[in-house]
Length: 124
Image (cartoon, rainbow, N blue to C red):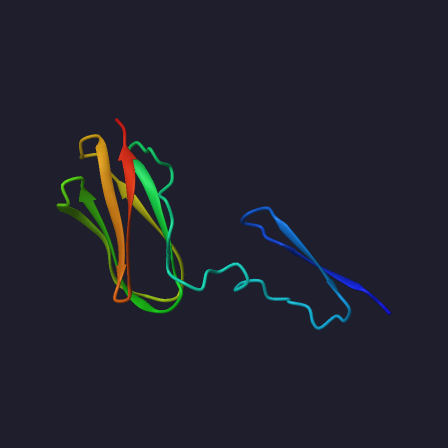
């Protein structure tokens, strides 16, 4: 009996999984969807702390109306970075805090079915 070993390398984490299989079923040739999340994801801004610019990255699992907002620590909305409908995929938004005082700020990703906030620290 022939034995096949399927090795899956996860580029994001650097881990790998080895599976012992008795029959080769198929080979995945298109990796574009293999490492895409199946849900909406808001990543931590980078760099953090930042001075004066940072990037906010997020993933949409389907076409959706999107808002990306910046708030001060008191919860007052300061900026609307994104306010539009977007297709499925990864997005990066650059935020420049040059005219703001140093401190802690909140950024928010909101769609009709999802809302998440994260903190970022601006140092001068």
